[in-house]
Image: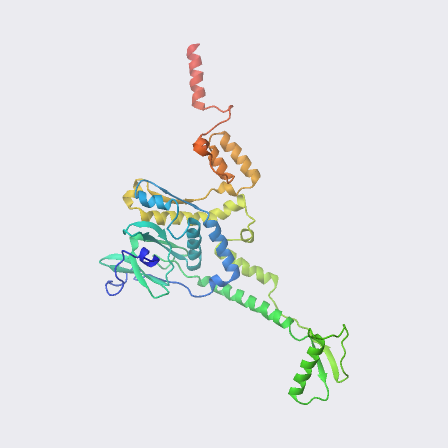
Length: 393
């Protein structure tokens, strides 16, 4: 059984049985089509998408509750048998940034039971009706088609406006992509023009084009090839006249225009230069987390919880949550201060403090105990002690 069968094992046959498109309130039949352009092929855009996916993939996925224990045990270790959680979250974030729509589907085992989740990348997807039930109908690059019930799938979106289910395309970014392409072409042409002819000269007593070509070839081989032994002295006959230097003045984009292009990309993907160069920590990292990771974590948690658990199971405390320990991204000085202050007051135990410093927990649960400094005392206990003293007196 391949990956395609593992995802769409319980799906109905796609041909000839659907009742038509699933109509929205505005009469629009929702469909998604992946963009075949070069948004991910641009170096600056790929760098922005990569840094977002890299930090998003650090999110820790936790499953809580008592429903579907077999599935929960599998999800605690990996999303499916093919990927790790880091690989899954990285690719999911990348797909979402490129297409503004990302799908999450369950993976079924040999018994037809869900054993994980995966994020497919179809070429086209539309919502259709089958026996009165809405389905997501996928079409892939190899021509395969399959469908799965909408209730069993998760859809993450960005820039969602016209469609009730899918995000918009990246057409707002296309003018900037064109500028990047023109910029790269200008640099290439500038390098080429700088590596062409440097001098020109007039040669007398040559009338045919073939003779000129042979003379240029002879002069180059005798003076500039590896076989030449000129000794640093260049000699040429008096048939060469009007020798002049060709000054190449190639045009390349200036620094201000380059800043505008970068600003357009950074604004669109909500990143900056420091984030791309891994120079953020402390308050800067908190801002990056709240702008990039936290919105993704909230949407992922809600989408996967809805697709994996029924409403009744959710009300009983079953959910999926993606979170990050933001304290790990503080400076060492800030980590030390936070660790001391929160541990002394019994807010963090030793294992939680060790996690801030990227250390493993203590064995045998020794780090689960909470401690406080000796000069701290519970306010209620203090009142009770004072009351007892008054009664004794």
